[in-house]
Length: 458
Image (cartoon, rainbow, N blue to C red; front, side):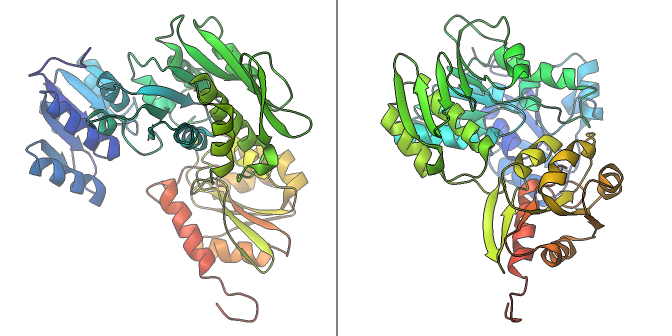
């Protein structure tokens, strides 16, 4: 059913990628649209100008609350938290609020693999879309990965499949999303700067299953009890993936390092060593994506070909170069402590770890064990630096603080030895210094490329 009757007043809050697409889709569906963003920065300003040129009422630099509170429906950006002033007033007024993905879902004709979890969502979403394409299907990766679902909903024709990354923020404001295949990768504490406790964070993740039916198909991490517990009692068929060996129905990595799958009969996909991705967590991501595509009907040989040909996405354990025998890796997307721990475990050589940014509520002390085994040094920076130093003192031989990305990269280069890895895996959001993790990762790469090489030639 449509998200609203034609002629409804629709307020769209936030003018990032999803907000702009939502405003355009709402207008196309007969809504009287008012779109706004509290920021007057270049991105929302440009979006407001584009929408205005199409006859859609939009402004950057503030919300007209009188207009927002007169709306029949509010479509909210996932970046606007439930405790924000505008969300609070909308809630008090009793106005129905939905996520942009819900708006797009109502007009979607494509079949959907929906992927959520704490870590690995973007890589797994990209993998799933890539494997579907390898199977001869038209597929697009969308959602939290960067392309708004509302943008796909206005396409003609729409793709055969959408691989849809869903964050907890998006799931919190969905109503009817019912994927053909749903994937829950893993669960660990995150976003504790936004959620009152880990249980409320997990509760939003569980909304993936809200519209479950007997026809639903779920791909779950057999190695993560929190995942299987969260799906307890949910209707539909379950398929599992595991790094620890065979499962009854699903995909696994065998002791010989070969990835296999069993739905009706057991098939061999490929050796895990053929993946172009770093770390055992990416083997798990490949198993999850491959299994979801197998459940969707993709042939084993196409799954193997797709997994083999997929390359690391930017800012996700992405090797960016080697300098003086040191490998430099951009993992700027690691915005929580558990993601950084996964990154550390991806290397069997000494690591100079760069941590910092805006604190998200998790203690960094949980990194201590991994640091003792793998880290040569930690370089801390940004707003979280004092907390990092306090939590990690005694866990690593060298713990220093720098200010500015150039100084951080320079200090890491001084500390690293041939054979080491310099790993930007911040365990924090970027918002103290950068608008997003992508800009942080690009700044890291730029600073790395400006380093002098041995002999003084840059």
